Length: 335
Image 1 (cartoon, rainbow, N blue to C red):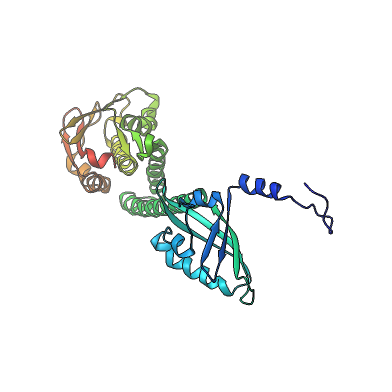
Image 2 (image 1 turned 90 degrees about the vertical axis):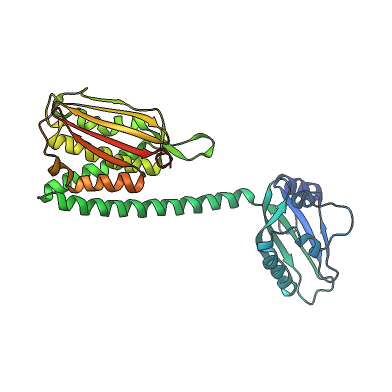
């Protein structure tokens, strides 16, 4: 650092300024407007991935700018010919290493009356910042999409629950249970390695969602789950959570889980391109098939299995309890 300036501020040497510029990753440029001659330092040539051999013009350099940004950048630089003051513009350039790189050009233009008409400025690589901004925008869009889906789902569940209950207390209780089930399913979804999306394990989904029903009447251990070890996608997890909750609620009202001695077994297997799940209840009271199949909850099950999971659902009312067979497309389950 050199001596103090006239205003008491330090005066920086050329070497100190160069070191500061280098450490900041800043590249220098100058544009002689009248002759379209463009000058850059070594860092700028590396940033743009152009050769430092031969004369360079703004027109030649602009060919490296992304086609979608080229006209905008040219217009901005041309407009600065009559501006005496700072300017800034962000744009993309095409490179071999990264395909696209974001550059921020900042500079200061001389007024139209200046004799040399020389503009000077800096280039900064802002690719990381732009990628972060794009990531935030994608996240915000995804969150907005999910919120809208959840609100639509909640509205549908509210309508179905209002038709299948007689009192507001019963409606509030059933609706709360359904929404809590969806929340538990969402908590199970975890990102997959390698950016392959998110998934929950099928067995975990059944175990967690059925845990509250296993403690009813202080008779734990009567629910057994033996299903293939496979990942279930985020959308399918929500659908399966509704299915599991509806079946468990029916069982608690009318089936095996309504009796302290009742038992529930869930088994599964892969069949060609499908996954077959069998819900078997034993030890519960006799169930009237027509009554159980015509409820709004059963209609919700049918709509969810066939519409969202590309499958089918079949009931078999045996003397020992109901047997429900779910068959779903594996491709729909992993989505």
